[in-house]
Image (cartoon, rainbow, N blue to C red; front, side):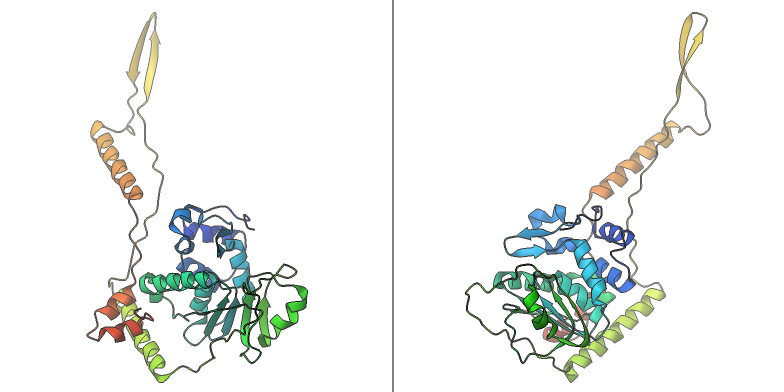
Length: 332
């Protein structure tokens, strides 16, 4: 499915197209989509297709089309502090975008049938947490993934404010899915498609993570990171080092010399018409030099995004385990 909007050259252009087609309609959803590059969730050899509005599947790894994800995000009506359950969480792309909106006091759980996809999602989440510059702008609700069949969730599990099911659901399972919701919650799912079944055929109850209250240690982490972010914003306002200038491509229109053929009696003369707007030879050389420099700059590999919060925390005079804890990153 997909193909509703034009392909983009990069993640921002893809989001621009989704906005223009009215798939993305709210600021919070737009910010979440821009914060996470869709190509980061592709295998390296398939990244050239990342910004097309098409679904992608390789083995058990699957990404829905961007227009589908944007419709889901808008339909969920996400707010900070809500609890979210992603049934068929896959690569974790959707769960990570949701986590940027839920904030530090939300709950973000995912259930995925295939264990190899769970490992893939954890790897992508690990890279996102360690390298993304989005942590300078968001308080992240880290997703937790468990392996299992979404139709075999333990009956005593907690309920959620928002539930999304990426796999097809038959009509007879509609009530089962609704029972996962709190009163007044929102469920987004496809109906009347063949649902996934466990590979072994043996029913095994899926135990979801508990909806635990934030510990004092965790609250201290949020307070410390918030204080560092405020300091960084103040430094940026005073002209500090957080500002980065985006590089835009622009098409240059080069002025050409005008050659004129003049007929005089029976002779032909080729001459150049004098024009004040024509380039001199020195200006031509300078323009050529600039064009070569700009082309080299465009063709060069763009600099990776900078996570300024991570850089600041890593420079603090603290033990390494505490630094990693502040950054939601735990060494393996």
